[in-house]
Image 1: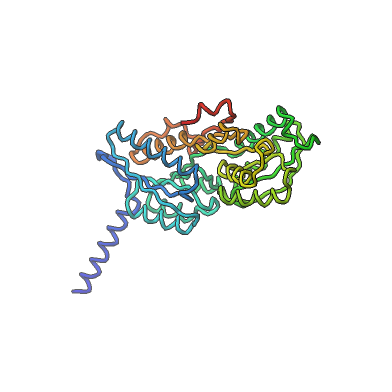
Image 2: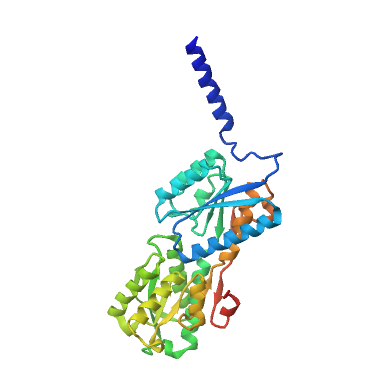
Length: 345
């Protein structure tokens, strides 16, 4: 008899688990008073990502005021570890998050996150670091918010080409060739590869001959970029006429190295960045950078918040004009000294 009761209890537990599985977000017919959004970023100290998250929280507060629905946001820092990020997503799911937003550490390794989210029927919005397109097609509740990396490379190249054409002093040795060095983000990272490739090809497409003196991986990091630039300054010195950086933080690291070397600003190479962070914009305003390419962090934050809200409340996502039903992409914009005041806070 005891054995039968034990089997009955086990059977009822199994039924309960099946009924609950995949039903975490079932709210139809219920009045929604609050939603919970979980966010994990690859590195909270990345300047662009931290500013994007600041905007995200601001829009969440505004949305709460407009709708009366409380938006709770849990933010996790993966500290550049994919295994840590996977564990964070698992924790978010256990805590009952309605939507997960993921700034992937490794864009080629989203499988664990996708599988966990699909099993719990919780939508995932990847942002800023774009995963492989085939992975985004694995489930109909996967989305991406960001921009097209090649556009930023093209615009960076255009800024550099215009600087070379407009200012004869940019060609220090007068040989008609733009000698340059590259500060790249992560090795093998799509944005690093694409931004580098398109920036250089755009300069040559504008009829300017180039010569690469060197490149360095600086992992989007200002301090690393300063160290790598100092090394190349020791090797190439005044031969460097252009520094192309995959982001503003690395461009600023190059500036730090030039200042530490006590090189007269008039003798600096042309420096161009990407992202349009607050500190990057200040450098453009001060004439330390020739320009930067604005990566619309406010637009991405707003798009991600609106999409997360619609998914969490069973709202209509069609009004968001998703590209291919999955993408929200914001265009880049070139920023030169004459434009910078429109972007500074």
